Image (cartoon, rainbow, N blue to C red; front, side):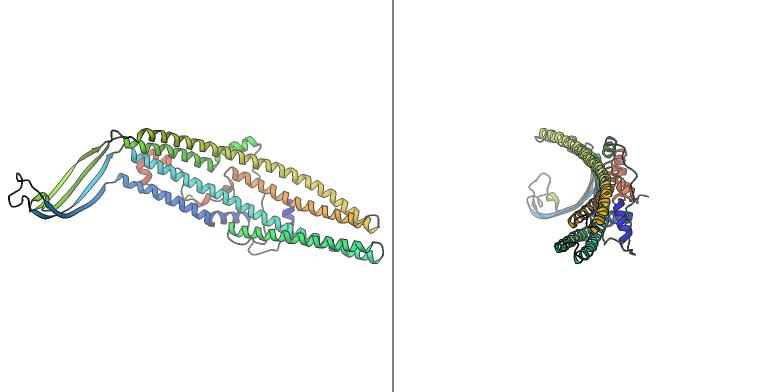
Length: 454
């Protein structure tokens, strides 16, 4: 972080549009289309849960029919009506209310509540990814701005050497070929800056995509103090807090409720039915007729050839979900291990390059004096300058990578958005719907609170 802070603080133009890292992360997490898409998914899944309130309410049906009918029943019809073709019509209203369905409705609520929890957790996981992308884009722009300035300094330094060499060539103290040699290095230094500036332009383009606007002039990355003490504690915390693992937990729970929904078809279904019907010329009678009815109805499928395969399928789906949960946990452990290894490597590399840079500064100072005294060749000085530039370049990148590693540790533990004081993915709902549904299925769909989290 030291090299980046130096270059940016000293040489970046001050701008009224300067943006802090926290502001950039908040912008990305709340305004990025990916965040808004995740929020829309949460809302849609919530409404799918609310749809289930219809399962606990009566179903009202309007029915009717019209046509022609011949009824041959002399024992109940008059001679005038029997065997006559008559137009007939009827209209009615029926009401059905489920009294028992093998706990199908409850498991529908449990499944959809669990699905909603998973959707909320996915949105939170997406917010961690967006926050990390914003941090990476922010640091990368800072790093490349510093490297661009470093490349400009390198050009200026070689031009300064070129002036010095020109004087020495004119004085006969250096051969003319040395002038050509320094010109070649100046051109190479300018070419290096072109490459850096292209990378900077690409980094700015990515910043615009992630954050939503161009980066400001003054940029600064605050340090991260929360670093795990060792890999084991890091992995344990990451698996425990990971939104990805919690999503896998919810998916496993959802598969259990899905299986219960299918099993409910094996129980009897009892409904309370009622209605009224009004008809003309019904059942062969040339008269108007009105009926009303109320009663209980039971349907029970005692045998279905699909059930053995269905039971096996339920078991395999449940097993699949449980294994996928283990896969998610293993992936988080691998991610934390790779992040930890990168953090250790970047720290060691930054310290090593710092030592190398100090040594190369001393070499360059010595070579400059020796060149002026004609005790050192130009090529020696140019090679020393090239080494200093390369080490500075690598040092700035290593410092940026070390800073990013610390933020990536927060993301691996699903704590990055929280670190910046951002409500994850701007989610308006807490992922506790399964718990609420298990306590009271009807309350989960009738008394759903949709107020923003405070």
